[in-house]
Length: 203
Image (tube, rainbow, N blue to C red; front, top):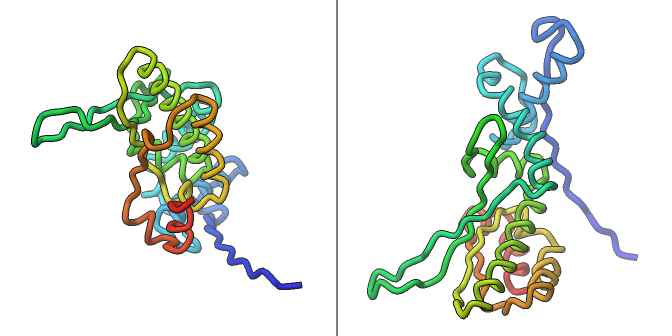
């Protein structure tokens, strides 16, 4: 029987009692803040410092609210036209996730997408955008309008071995031809795991 070697990474947020807090709740919250910073900066460990706390209450609140928004359909999808500048014709649309928070108003993607990636919610978010995009494509097609829809993929989604099957399932449910769905992939997503990224693209 062959052996499978797995590599495991961990990001640790550390606090010191009593310098960083006198109660369990404060210490855990600040350790979480340090952990998010360690993940963001791709560090193995990060000791809490007060400067990290500047935006942490909002970020921690949004992390909890985002999971609920994804689950309950609180993320809407807007479609930005892609215009061919040579002739002015519509060359497709790009699906953009939008989050209207009940208290904070519109939360920009550049704020909530990193939260989704850190909190392992990016897969459900991406599949939600894909499902809504396929549903919208079919609705447009029934009115006689047809176009392509482009969806952005993060690194974590691209290298997920389940993703190709998820895409096939969504296309089948909504009757959307595969050639009408485009993916936008950044260079960083390709460089994170080139072999797996190429395998996923091929699938």
